Amino acid sequence: MDDRPDRVTRILREGGGSGAAWSELLPLVYDELHAIAERRMAAERAGHTLQATALVSEAYLRLVDDREIDWQNRRHFFGAAAEAMRRILIDHARRVRSQKRGGDRARVSISVVDLAEDGDPERLLALDDALGALEKEDPRAAEVARLRFFAGLDVAQTAQALDVSERTVTREWAYARARLAELVGGESV
Image 1 (tube, rainbow, N blue to C red):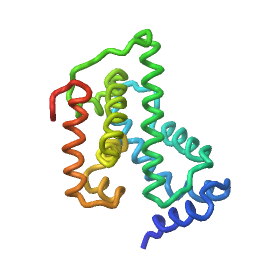
Image 2: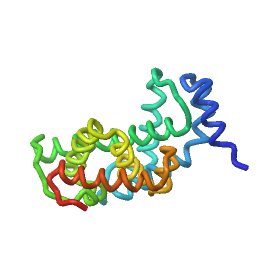
Image 3: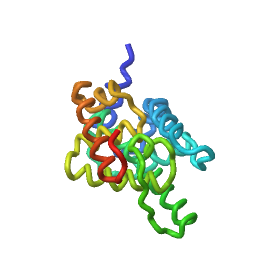
Image 4: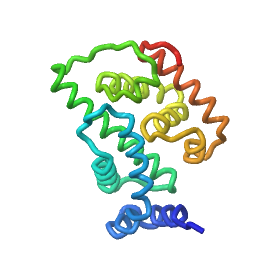
């Protein structure tokens, strides 16, 4: 039986802030982090300058550097990792946009599903802004959307990560897609 999930939780709770704990943790979580990054990068535009391995490394470094986090469990860690990857991609999109477009933001009409998958920096930034607004209205729906869009998790994986039923994820996902489409000015999906 694979005891990695329990070991991950134990390491995070006992010594998540120490260098030794981070060294012990990396081999336990690397494959899963890399799978999340690969799913996320598969949705990015062709020729993206970031690679899945670089995304994992950067996200892990951000987590290691944040010594203030009081790690609760494995779910908390992977949620933070998905959020770190999202922020890295958003930061990258902002840099690309500012270089390409002189920093001006353009409003685009698109469907929410296309937003997450085409990798266009303008669309990715529109989605990020909409997710911020959704977070204020319905934090769980925003968390479901982040895990679905940016971590590439399916309904069952999202339900497991959030420790809720698949039905709850399906309901929150339907609401999140409709609300995000409304917030970015696209049609409902």
